[in-house]
Image 1 (cartoon, one colour):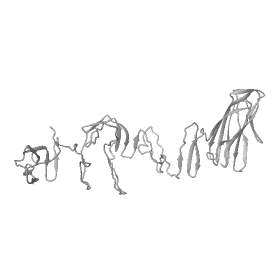
Image 2 (cartoon, one colour):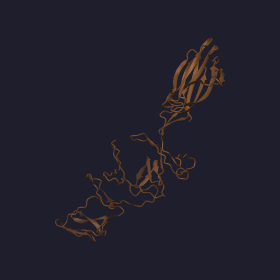
Image 3 (cartoon, helix red, strand yellow):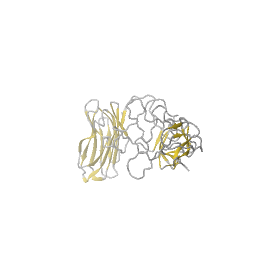
Image 4 (cartoon, one colour):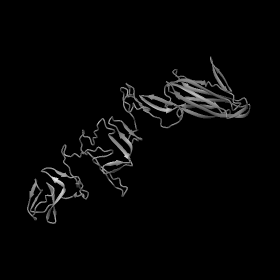
Length: 387
């Protein structure tokens, strides 16, 4: 049988603990002989006579619970139902547990009656000290985890069962979790500090894993990741130690043009000065024929840019392929596609240097079909920074 100690009230002329101190006396009430079933046991009013609380004993300074002792304050309604000493070392809940998944202390909230945001345990430090720590978790370096967070578990008699861990912190400071989402007021960021290699440091030394680190020496810079995912290679636009990344296949570095032998395209921006500042670039192009001329017809692709001479330059895109008649120097570059078959195509790359004062542009020169047509197809451009 488990007795719960709720309120200690004794009304009698002489109140004492059996067989030892402390002894209390006061006025009012009846008298009698204290119960002596258990030495130093607490006494209670048992219909005018002393009764033994055998699960609790006392010395001059300490109340001690036996195996079945329970201190029950569950009916208390005060805002501070249990008050503990506010001195250094005044309160310590401690115990020893050696069984698997067991704990000497379990704090549990069994609210299942509503969807309010109730809390199982609150920890607060509202003081204004600039040096205080709200919660300290001290781990032995030899233990498994410092902190486990999981779902689906159940505590019963101090033993945990059925939990699936979703987050943990190792004594080394390593953090493992299923995912992470930042909710700060600025963009989420990861900072790589310079230092010696982490190749032999856990969890970087875990077999069959990928570990990414900073080099031993770093000149600080910021990397802005691409805002939209698309095909292509990563592009890097660096200004004032800020690397703004993109993809060679995004709208800032590429274009898809529907061409026709009936229409020329005037100078059109392919990559603006914002995304193609001063630097060296490789422009790649591919042109196909989806509807051919019956006879002749022509199509020429041009590139327009400004280099260190500050003079705008225009050059034919040096294409090769079926249906293309190329001439590369020494005094001219020509590459004319004659689209008389849907098997015709042209492909090529052109490296140029831009001062970044004007955009990198393209234009086309169309020649009408002699018969049939018009010839039409797609023209694909990509610009990649290489220096």
